[in-house]
Amino acid sequence: MLKNALFALAVCGIVAAGPCMAHAKLQSSSPANNAHLTEAPKTLTLNFSEAAKLAMLKLVRDGKEISVPLDKDAKAGQSFTLTLPLLAPGNYTVQWAAVAADDGHVTKGSFAFSIA
Amino acid sequence: MEIGGWDIAAAFAKAVTYAATFGAAGAVFFLLYCRTLLRDRQRTLVRRLIGMLVGVAAAAGILRILLLAGSMSGEFVGMFDGTVTSMILGAGEGRATGLRMAGLALMLFAFSTNPVLSRSAILGAIAASVSFAWVGHIHGLVPNTAATLLLCLHLLCAAFWLGALPPLLIIAAGANVSQIAAAAARFGKLALRVVALLLAAGASLLLMLIGHAAQFWASDYGQMMAIKLLAVAALLGAAAWNKLYLTPRLLRGDARAAQLFRRSVLAEMGVGALILLTTAALTTLTGPP
Image (tube, rainbow over all chains, first blue to last red; front, side):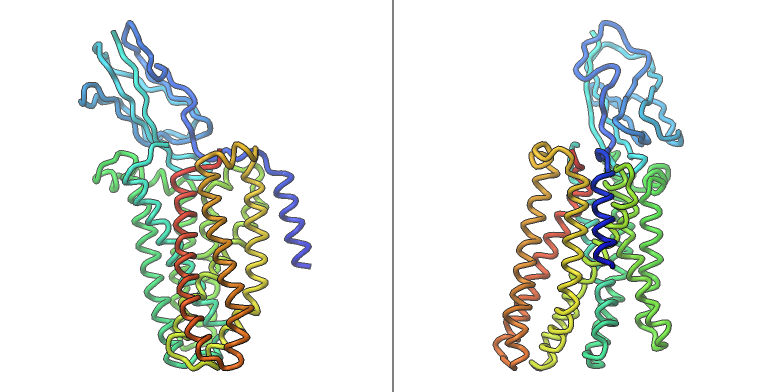
């Protein structure tokens, strides 16, 4: 009886399960990774592979952190757009960390762009 | 994902949480299942072990959440960022940790002399063992009900098997051959079914997570899973050697077999630790492709 129930459970699970969408991965961003811009962007957008909460975002230029307001209490979403202060020409690195809404996994990453 | 010292520390804390939770839960199962085979002194030692492991599991579980919060900013003060900690707890980790803490607290009833209260520790052992199913990669599957139930079964069987090893070592360390033989035979009888369930549930979960096979095994997750499967095969080999070679000799009163049994249980504990470390790395540092 238990054996049959377990077998049925396993078969149902394997047949019904769709692709596993574990971990919120950064799919794209604006500015894009390694973008060379001629004028300063007014906003920063991060698009994730699944719903997540953006827990940390650091914008760094020449080792100095530039404050970017981040609403950590915002609801989970796949896309986050943040308003940027006026950026001077230079090389920028964006470091981010997110918590996946469905499985609670933490993902982190970074990307760079420059303004001429 | 970029992996740094914080992430490795968080994975290590998770491995300790697994080991201590399964160790405490498995000792509670063992105490109930092999109670009549244990002497008073051994029962006391197993209870002390449960108490110690409950404390370690609770502390490691809390430390892991703080390390995850710290890993986001990469700074020590980040560990105590209330907003980030609430974010982690709100995304499933809170339910899992809450259930585990309640289970760990219930397990302390193993110390009670009241038989009803003492048996209620088993509920705590079940709750703490299955708590890990309330967060993790399977929640990325749609639907995930069958996967959650299978993972609960997998976790319970893992706790029964791995958690029984320290109490078996306590028996093997100080008892005569006949007592070791009785404990090995009694545990081995149920372990056979439990291991079969563990493998069946684990294999089903793996099939659900695999997706595209070639892509899966080429990924970091697939390669770490291959290491875990090799370690599981080694553990199965040691368990089979215990059951098929050592236990019959123990039952015949072979003193040399008792010595080999102790070493074999120690080796199983070592391989078990490797499996838990790999699982913690799988569930913290990587994800299915």
